[in-house]
Length: 447
Image 1 (cartoon, rainbow, N blue to C red):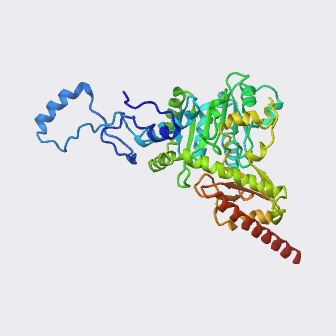
Image 2: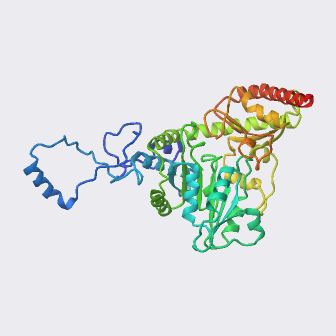
Image 3: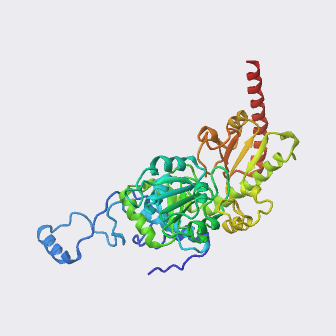
């Protein structure tokens, strides 16, 4: 039995949720990286006496020293099934997801797309109803899920836009609804209670929410009745250091999580040992990193909105639109039970109890040339895809997703830089991007 009290504070949970996994005595303070792929099995208890007698007769001198209490309490067999590092990661992730008081059990995968694929495999959809922004997931569902058999082997699985499904009335048995909260890269919040009410009016349906852009302790997805599974790309804010690939599926019940683990064993989507260890390292500080990044994102979004509003004459025309919840919910958004509508303010506040919004924002600039140039002009940030690192990352999203976003949009993942430094840096970079755009126009006109 554990001698530790159940921790309540998030910082305590993240530091000590894996303290009682029974991994032996004299454990190191920092979790070791378990690189073994296979584990020595214990002797059969019913043969113990016979084995001892046979050893005494044939092996009078032991071949190796015997170490007391060397066996792990858990019978590890093969690392694809389970290993000590992975168990620690899942214990701490579960504690993080339980921060708002909801039951949660985490299962970790080799990438975010592996996690969403595992969730869909588990749900066995007849149709996948999608309201997504991230083109990687959309592409995966369109190219991999579409045409595969659903629960009925004779019925191919279809991928259906949410608007089409809503227009058709009630969902069908076997439908799986997948939504992002917030959406990538727009930052919009779905009317999640209304969506849950719509999809759950039919038995045998599943609601999966991708919460990558705002993990706990920012967002309480499991607080919405009807959500079945929550998915994160752990590569992003959970990992937080731009040095690992990973994903996680969070279930409400231990039984569902155990089923997901069994399925993961045969799907082969277990994370590598190093990646699991790096994720465990990162989770110790997620409660410090993510709220700090969210605060700075709100400050920058607010300042950029003042540029849009014409309040900063020097930067007039450089930014035409800011996409971030702090801007969307600056004014009250009225209540609505329309599942196709954005989240009203009351739902947004319930999803984000501390009103610390996502650390990701997007901006639309005055021209395509300026948007292409900006990521390469900031000093405190990097021109790179992905998000969630301790350094700010800027990406001209049109390059990756030309069908889904305008060519003037830049997605920004805020790091841990000081806001005043970012503000000064962005002032210079926006002016420089404007110069680049004007030079491109002049060159084009000259031709």
